[in-house]
Amino acid sequence: MNLASRRQRQYQRKYNSYRKYTATEDVNYAAHTSRSSYRSESITSRSSDHGRSSSSEIISVSETRSLPVYIATQDYIPEPGDIESISLEQGQIVEVLDKKNAASWLIRTKARPPKSGWVPGSYFESPTEYYKQRKRTRELVNSDLNLTDEQEAIMKRDQVYHDLLRSEEEFVNELRTIVDIYLKALDDEGIPDEVKEKKNELMMNLKQLHNFHANIMLKGLQYYSDDPNKVGQTFTRLSRDFDLHIQFHHNLPHVKELLKEKTIIDFLQRVKIREFDGSWKLEINKLTTEESGIISCVAENSEGSSETSAHLTVSKKTFAPQFEDRPKNVTVEQGQEARFQAHAIALPEPVYQWFIGGRKIRETMEGAKVETVNGVSTLVIDTKIFDSSTISVTATNSIGVDETGALLTVQEKAMEEQQMNIPVITKALYDQTVKSGEMANFEVSVESNEIITEWYSNGKQLIDGMPELWHELIKISSSDIVIFAELWHELVIMSSSDLVILVKKWYELMN
Image 1 (cartoon, rainbow, N blue to C red):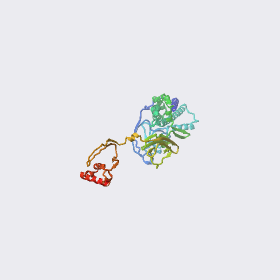
Image 2 (image 1 turned 90 degrees about the vertical axis):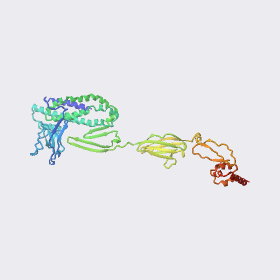
Image 3 (image 1 turned 30 degrees about the vertical axis):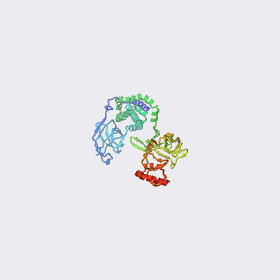
Image 4 (image 1 turned 45 degrees about the horizontal axis):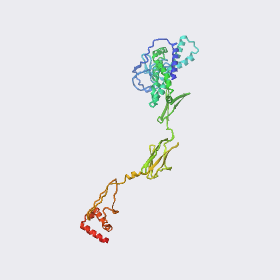
């Protein structure tokens, strides 16, 4: 933040110095808000023999002084018959429309009306380099010459202009670095909420400052580099735009206080770029796995650019297991299943081992089953086999181990609950008297599910159907005959005379 302030003071000193050697005159220079609009009908289609662009197009541009400006370092006269090239004089200012091929640039002169044509790129230098060379030439050639006051004033004026132009270019480069790194970081969607809330305050008007100096101020200085006398009026024309610096310095104290907050400090210091004697160093702190990818560095100047890249792999930090979900104590009735669950966080992933009563539970152990799904381990205990006991589990990886446990309580069923399942007779048997040869019917109603009934006569179990009737009759007392008549269909169809014969036969056998 102090950079802008320092540069502003430099500008003021250089401008005050410059005014001493500059005459006041009208400058026919459009206001900075105007656009450098032009339409050129120049045909750029050229044969490959000249090493020039081979496309035919109409160049139409409307922009804010975005074309690069260069100065001719020497006179150039095209070869006879080369109607697509134009002649230049040393010190002439041009705008470059196409410099893809260094052997031949498509340029347009600043003179009115402008001329467009092809000139070898070796005939040009940037304004900064051009005036730097002129300074060195004067120091070598004119060191022993006696200059008139006017010549000395011109030389000093050119030198001041060169210093001013160089300072402006450096300032623009530094502002561009701030925009590309600092402001770009604040525009990131993943910034902390605390930083996002104060984003606009932290950004201030840095984008507007960069746009003014890069696209208006610097381009204006370069455009009038062939006539530094006019540059003084440029400052006057742009005086209102320098209010951007007033606004910047007005907000600066508040931003400095914001920059003391820990959250903002941690965020801004996460990425550091440093230069050490021509070497550049990048530091990125608190990396996340999502930032794995390609890191690139692009080095560029007015002549071109170079790039180098490398892969960055961010692996998760390893740590020992820690149980996040621990098994809870379980109480069940005997015969029910008991479930225990545990989940530990760790890197690498942990391996679980369960124990019951201190015994390691293995896959083949009867009555115990272990399964792990999505990092959660579950133990199922069959309480028909296992009784009350202690349950423990360990989570282990290459870094360490963690252990936890719970209690298994197995209870017998309560007597009341057991008795609740006993069949309840809702309609009981009642006494009956029947005559010999008649049928007796007995009926019972029972309240319960899935019951089995058994019938008895004088303590002996009755069997449905009785296929061995005639073999068993000799073992049955006379009172049983009536019951058989009720239950077996063989006796139901007998006539009373048959029954009398049967009874007589039975008495004979018994006696």
